[in-house]
Amino acid sequence: MLDRGPPQLPGRPLVPIHERRARPRVAPQTVATRREDGGLVDRSETELIESLRARDLDALGEVYRLYGDAMTTLARSMMRDRDEAADVVEQALMRVRDAAPRFRGERGLRTWVMRIVANLCRDSLRRRKYVAGRPDELEVLGDAGLRIDPVAEWDEALDRATLLAALERAIQALPVEQRETVILRDRLGLSYEEVAATLGISLGGVKSRLFRAREALKKRMRPYLEEAS
Amino acid sequence: MTERHEDERLARWIGAVRAEADPVLWTRVRARIEAGEELQLLPAWLAWLMRPAALGAAAAAVALVCGAGLVTIRSADAPGTSSAGTLTEALLDEVTGTAPDDAPAIPSDPSPGDTGAIG
Image (cartoon, rainbow over all chains, first blue to last red; front, side, top):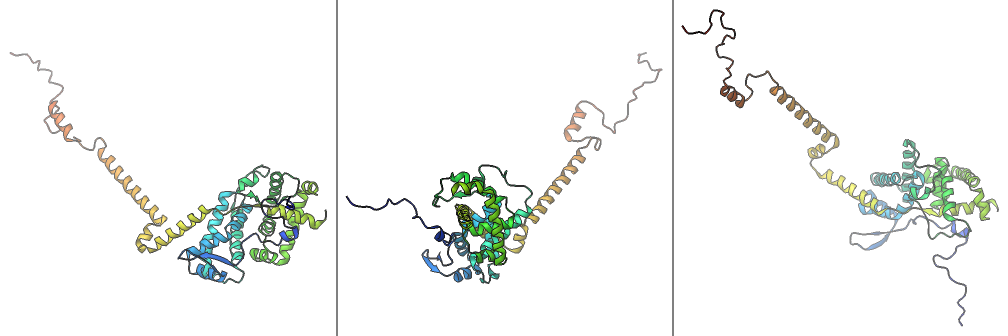
């Protein structure tokens, strides 16, 4: 009988935690785009920016293809309302198109796009006159249009849906500046430098906000953390 | 559990939730941009007329003209403004024997000496 080795689980292979943190959750800076002839070709970010400056609509579509997931995740996580988040992303795309001729590209396209989304979220939250949904509702993820990543590793013997709903409520209870920092860093996997550039604050500011946010989250998630350990 | 492990676990939990881009949104944005570009190709005066403010002003003007017309028609139909409003009324007056306004007046109260008897 052949020795097949340890059984292979379906899905992605397990990755050690220290390696998982380094894995970027948003698209890398080198991109592929569709030319007029329909073929996919690689082109640098610089070329994409040049096309955006020339008000090429396909280039804007490419931006949405590359960063649409991250834009939507940030907007929905911040707004906690699917429709408002859609408005924010739509406005962000229009603003990217309008402001592209003035974009110098020094901070990188992804950072610039995410900064526009973050600013629009902040503006919308400031103007908002109501609180979207009750903070204790069970469908906190579904109502916000967020979903649990089906391929995310989960080694705790905890009810994933209940835990993540509780965590989402805890995130929503954070002040806006801490919330956006923790979402950009921990949910979207941006580096500290990228978070700083996106929010227009110093590296120290990012670390300080993250520390305070995590302390608050750990306090609220204490029962789950103890159960998991 | 150490502080670092807790942070890592928390970060992993936070990262287990995400959203996907909505393709319909891009279709909507594209249509919006293309509609805006088409508008830019129109003659300036036509583009100006299609602005919401111009459309609103035009709708207000139409409403004003309609209102003024209605008031004019109603004031023309008001009773007492004409002796015979229509041709039909005038003909009916004639058939039923109603004296027109300019006919000589018949005294309604005959003189007391006139009994009406012959001879």
